[in-house]
Image (cartoon, rainbow, N blue to C red):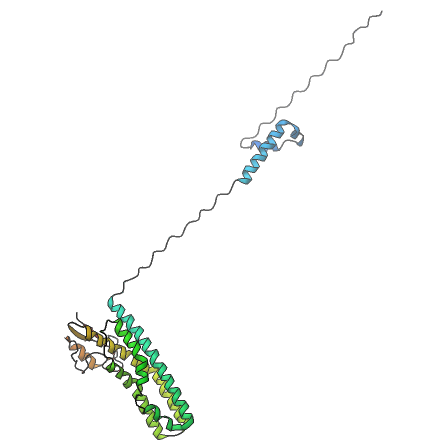
Length: 287
């Protein structure tokens, strides 16, 4: 047999050494560096691990709640300081309320009386005047309308029960009722023309609403205040003029009189204000 010489097999070529992976630059995120690898590396186990890490990292970034803005609570405003009313302030408030109530009551009577006169004048001329202005108790509607407001005011000031207001009600008659009724009598004697009479009625009662009623309301409330001061005083009283008032020398003399016993008359002959329809004085007790 022929012996076969062994055939020399070629030696395998040495595999090239793998190039070292470049180290990430300082400050480069490991996850970002791995993200730059080619897609075929995704099949390796290491690529899967890095992919999961990147996914988890993204979820953490996306799920992290943003910090809530700090809301500064507004500073609480200090509560307003409520000044305690002194007795004199309470009297002023009571006076204002009583004047308003008295004025409303009187104006209603004025309006009603004007309507009655105008209706009568249209029907019978001057003959309609006398039944209104000369009737017994012509002032009664005014007295009945204003009395409740004055009694409430007197009670608020601490007046004794049963205080007499008749003298006070006379002020309404002298300021509001009597001047108007007297003028109507004069006009009715001078003419019987319905138009002229109607114009006179409207003018007189318009003036009553705008001037006479406010004056009367101030006067009667001032008088009730003076009556109550005298009724409850345990000592002397004095007359005080308002600095900005419209009173004249007579009221000034009353003030100069100084202290007098409660109920005693001052130089003008009055025991308490008002000394005239527009008097703004007041009576003050010394105790």
